[in-house]
Amino acid sequence: MVLVFVSIFLNQLILSFLIFIMNIILSTAGLPKTLKIQRQEAAKQLQRRDFSEPIKFRDFLFTAGRLKLAYKLGKKYILFMWLFMIFSIGGLLFIMNSFWLKLMNTESIITYSVGFNTLHAITSYFTLKTKNIIIMRKERR
Image 1 (cartoon, helix red, strand yellow):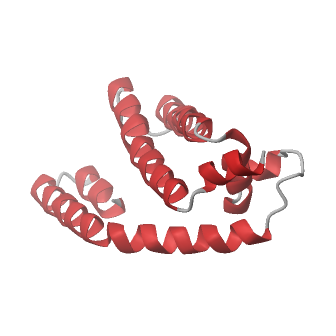
Image 2 (tube, helix red, strand yellow):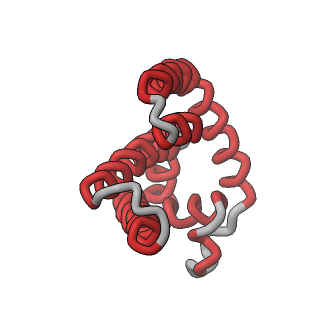
């Protein structure tokens, strides 16, 4: 995606389109393996977490803390993280656009922040659903 951004910045639209299509193809081909690796990592970290601890700010920054948040919030976690990421990434892009780069309009900022974060939310949901973290939450109550 960095190459797409650089090639668009240098007005190489055909090259950026080809790199973007290659990126979609490679990402789609690697998605099952990526989800499998995420599930294995979530299972390892899930065994090491103590879910009785209160939620701290540090939990928002690391994967193990996000698993604790998913355990405590259940399905609301996906919605919460989706909104959090939209506002944080969209806000950063808006600040960069206002004070520094001026490359994007407001519609592009909204489209990118919603689109990319929706993909992240979908992969997070399937990772948490397949490891039964949300189901475990209901059983431990």
